[in-house]
Image (tube, rainbow, N blue to C red):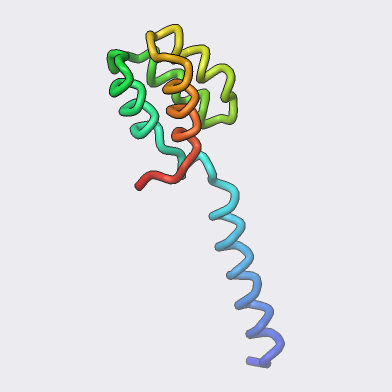
Length: 90
């Protein structure tokens, strides 16, 4: 096998691997951290809280905050929880 063909194959494989990693940011979202923060702030862990955290994952920060405040989470804690939704789980 020629060296240029081998290098091209390695680069193509690397591009596919990195492309798959960058194309899936939702897999890195941390809905449990968002939900936990919301419950620590006084909300019950309901489907409404989880749905609001999912909106935070999709980038709808305002929708997430509105959903969490409607579920009884104070504004500052709701904002923090929604921001947690977009981070990689730890």
